[in-house]
Length: 640
Image (tube, rainbow, N blue to C red):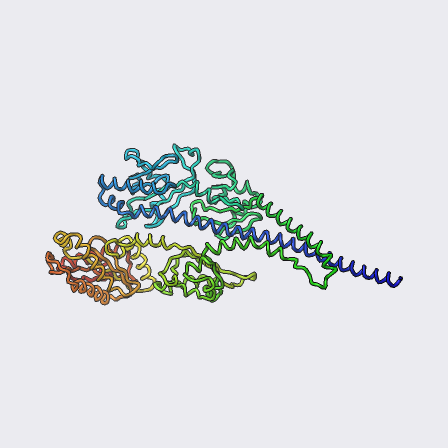
């Protein structure tokens, strides 16, 4: 009996040890699991913040691109240029119809206006909230805006560029209008033959967009200006605090982090300040130098924390209950205690799936080989996602663009710096497309460069609109506006590289007589034929051909000596003559001919764009005076 009792006691002793060991494992595992859940929760919240911010940046980009497209369409319209060239009542009526149609098509527009070079309103269309349709303002009610800050600032911007105002509230009769109407102004200057003629400016109702911008189920989203005043408050109480003089600022509402947020230099990468996530959006609201704040909603956070705690307690209870039979049958193997953790990651996986399907994003190693990429990125390239892995970044380069165009990108990235800009990529089996690209260096915990991240946004439609604005409709050559931009760049490039710059001006001889006797339709075909002759002679990427206006053309070319430039211009003159286009009313030949004024500029010359154009024009005048159908060549350093 004694032996049996001792054996039974030992049995209970060992069983008790197994049970105690199982409980110890259960407690330790539960504590570790709970800590992992807390850390996982914070990490998921940060990832959610990054996803939300990336989505809001895309919304801002699409919004501003849409506004710029509206302004560009009006600025570059033929009706506007026709009116400015020769104002009359009929053209004015057509112009007001255009402005009204633009406003009618875009209900977010409060005003669409054209101000002349003195700041006087020429056309204004108003559409107030609650009205059925936009209204063209009568001429006698148009105002002088020449002293308004937006006219003064916007009139100083470069051709084809856009000016944005601050985000503010609409003011009528020097008082903030009630109910409050958030408004943004976007403007672009109108230039003709390098002369400023005025501004196209739109006033935009931004309430609906700002409400959409701050709408999110997980975060309160706010915008503040560089002084810390609230522009838009996710909780609504502090919005427009500067204009309403309510006293609300980041410092008063977030005393623990407010001063640090304003003191730190913000970038487009999110920074964490305790429960806040902060990044700059000044690229869209430059005047305000705006900052976006994301703060998790307490009820949502509390719900997520409660869910985490309930899950942790459930796991503890399950582990404790299971630990006893596990201890008794430990030889049968341990239970899988961490299965719940895997299930908890499903929500995060769903969020990442949204990014994968909608955002063009990828990562590369240091040699430019793709490691991974989103499905959206692969789809844009016309390939499957698994085909992207292992591809070299160089395979994406557009074949129409010289490879050296991409060199500055890699030079910046190899320094471990961020690169942002517009690049062309090729879509497999299709034409090239434009993308607004951000390349970010990826570094290890020790600070070593380990790879790169690439984020893109397709801007092909935007680039097509820009191309239309610099192209001559009849000939397909670059127009005078683009010439004014290009010659400045080419002159600076010639000086930097130490090469000659040559500028040839071509004028069709007796073209007025051609139009008078053959008709303008045939005249247009002659312009197209001459444009084709000139373009066919340009074999280098650095050579550019323009229609300067009327029957005048221009060619810019680099790295020619004076004699080589003369030979090249003479080749084109002869090609036009040999084209043999009938011109019975010419006094110099029975076919269409051209007179050419050629100016060669050395890199040491003290040249300006205005001087180059004037001297080339004088050479062209001499060619006409000397009998036409000839080239007169001059060197700038022999004339000044």
